[in-house]
Each structure stands twice: as structure tokens, then as C-alpha cells.
Length: 165
Image (cartoon, rainbow, N blue to C red; front, side, top):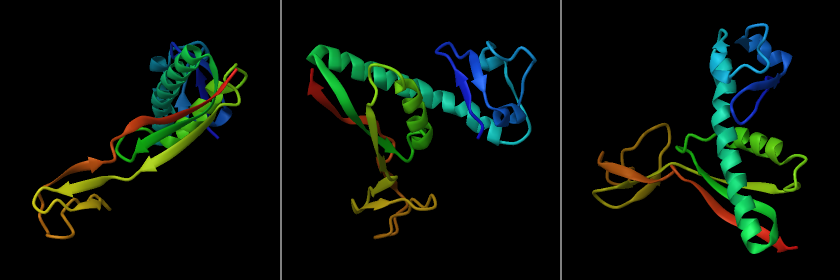
């Protein structure tokens, strides 16, 4: 499995052989900023670099969890997150990054529970709300093409489960 580990300043710290096959790195790749890594052939390498976005989202979530826990003098047990289909966040990459950041910290064994939200549009003509499938945004009820986003772009906390210390 291709995995790269970077620090908060995006310096490459570790990578698996599978990741190295997908990326062309200089011999001194460890410690190099991720912006200094060039893509190898194929689109799979792009997916590796894109997970840096999920790492920053996970890091920001954990900062918020720590701040809220400290303010309440409590220990966080679980955090719930809503991720819309159009949010630009890959739920599985986010889960992986979250687990890596929580591992061996005072937050462990913090659980991440993800609710995936589908892309839904609303017809401006008849107000019918419907799930968008295969990018077809025409209203299935009245046939109008004038529709607007109703949901699916969310990235939000749903809840934080805490226990008193």
C-alpha cells in the first residue's frame, strides 16, 4: 500500500516502497518538502499527495477537540463528523490521517464516526428535493433544469462525546 508520512510543515518523513514506486524522488527525499516531490507516471501518485489535505483537516479537527475538552475539563471519547459527497474530503483518507494523528497521544483511543451525506438538489420550480445520481440535476418530478444545491457540500462536526476526568 502506498503511504507517505509528512510532518506539519509537509516534510517527507517516511514512505513505503509502493509509494516510492509511484513517485520520483531525489535520493535525499526524506526531509524534503512535499512540494519538492515530482509525480511519477499514473494518476495513483496524485491520490497520495491529495491525502495531505485530509491530514490538515484531521489536524484541525483534533485541535478543536483538544480545545473543547480542555475548556470543559473533560476527556474526549468520540467525535462525529458529517462529510458531504461534494465536500472534497475523502472519508477513508481522513479516517486514516485521524488514526495516525491520535495514535500514541493523550487523545487515544478517540473514535471518529463519519456520516456521509449524499448530493441533493432542490427544484426551484416545484421545490422537490432529490438525490443527484450520475450528475443528472434535472428535477425528476417536474423535469425542470433549474435546480440548486440542497446538501452534499457539508464538512461539519456533528457531536463530541466527552467524559468527565
